[in-house]
Image 1: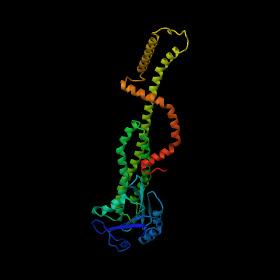
Image 2: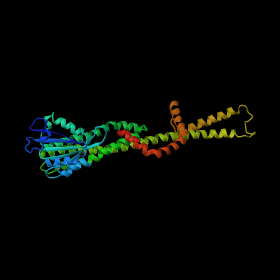
Image 3: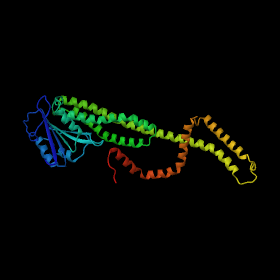
Image 4: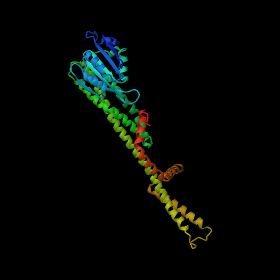
Length: 375
């Protein structure tokens, strides 16, 4: 095989599995309790695999589909063989890879189009640990399903560890929260797409009356079904948590906007009577009262200061503003004035962001997924 890499291990007794030559896997009198054949397809060479499948009693159309099609987790019982499609986590990015598992009498055949960390981990383990080789080929398949499903569950454990951080950043109205939540929702959706079908497949296997499955294999699939159920529940809980984090961010952002608006309102209400006084005495009439008085500006300035202090006291009494420290008041007022000064610019900026939003969002999600941006 030029475009296909194949390896095989067998278990003869109670010890660990041992590698065998691929030429001996076709022998019908192979004295082994089970044989595991792992095939990695480097290029689409379905005809060569179909010929190989026929010698092992596999369904030719199912083998061709395993090479040419991308399937969600599923289960097909052909009588003399069973096809189980599983999905596990990839290594480079948070995406799932398909592993097509064919179970026949005393043989398990796995076909994949890319490297699978789950397959490699179990492959190495069965050659080192005898307790992982007990049972028939269906139990080996059950162990593989267990490894694949638990790796999906590990994503949720990692998510739970970062939930508190996301919540704190959302309550602080961190501007990066939306991008992080969007990327996390995309990852969770990709895993959810396979977790629920995979749970249904395991539910079928634990109840299957097929003669290729032993009681020990069904019990093992029942255990993996519980793991898949926890993963499915965790996925749904994670989606709910992300929605709540997004709502918390929006609430925090609205609260900050309300504080700024309140500061600007108080600022405008205080400045309005002062502007009225300044405008009145700024009129160009020669008979304005106090115009010839050298101390008139002092009286007017004192009156304006008194009006400002009284207005501020009224707002404090009404509870519109609290009595902050001078530093906090200056910072809040400074933010409010900065927002007022930037308001005309933000209108133009918002129009620009709306026109470019799809491009910016796609680029952000790609960066979080580790994919390169399109030029």
